[in-house]
Length: 458
Image (cartoon, rainbow, N blue to C red; front, side):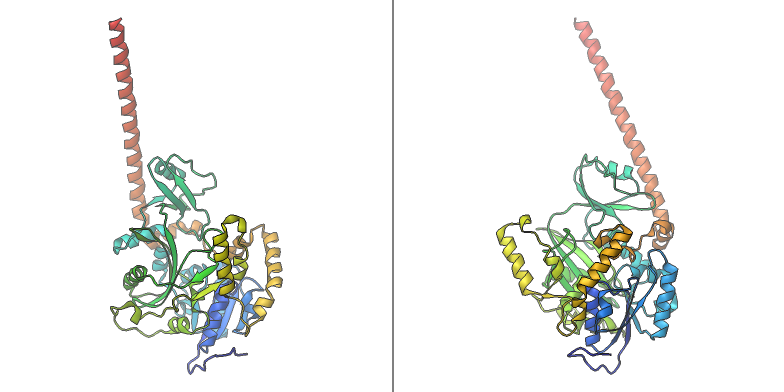
């Protein structure tokens, strides 16, 4: 195996498996772990991906697509774990749900992930919102919607709402709706696909990433949302400090004493509020802010119990240097001058020219040199599947529990509560209809009385 410069000689190297090799975070994390002296393997349903050409990766194995063949995917991952004597499995995207749901000891004992029930509670936007309320942390007002009628009833009330699937990702199927709006025809809310309606909050958005073990934050990064290609997916990352968010995640981690995992939270801050809107319990772009270091790698592989929670955040959490910046150069170059003014353009160019690309490395050139070949391969897959490039890139890894929602509700302890909510909603709708009928009847009576009085007057 070829070593990259500055690689440490680790006296206790691990064999580490990354569960896909296609994303920029995959190659970035592979390099960070390799730099610490570990041996990296990847699996992926794509035959060709960026990690396959990296000097930081010892082996890449094709596996079946979990989205359509979860059993085949699990079997293939188990074979890789056994054949390569894997010590640690680090999930990179939504394949984490297939792996955790398998409850196979060969996988679970090595998987860096919360227990299955905790994983669901954090990922489900509705139960995550409830969880925050239970532990005393701020979250937007929210309503669970199980039908278009639920959304229509909500839109009779004043206010603006962000309506989206409880198991959605990024900005997919997110609707900004206000009072008296119609329910979008493409909204596929149903008993098998629940949505959440969160109050629409306008403010500064932040994305965080952290590694927690035994109720303690071991590594943490935070960046503001300032350069995106779709209003949601960031392509520029700059590390900042934010004491209130640091306090928020510290309190949250302390409520998960039995969890070892990667967790990422999205925040919105206004003049007087700081709220978490969702959780991604997996690897995210916050990994990029640790590029070129072994700080995150050390936090990911450390397994022994940690000491009691200290009082000072900065004394126990590994963070990237404030002001560290990274970019996804292809995404940054998609910026269109017509979209903004000259000051924004100059600011964008400063970021483009002044920050390092997360894929390019002069010590590991092949992933960058192979980009034209990979892009051609990706567009061929897009043509075959009739999908856009962003959708294609995620399609075979996404986890959509529509066919097993009953089992998910049972795991979350939701089934009984949802029945109660349904009964309460029906009773509320019945009372509202009765009140409307009474108001109409009252209006008719008053109108008839007025006509009679008028007749007498004549």
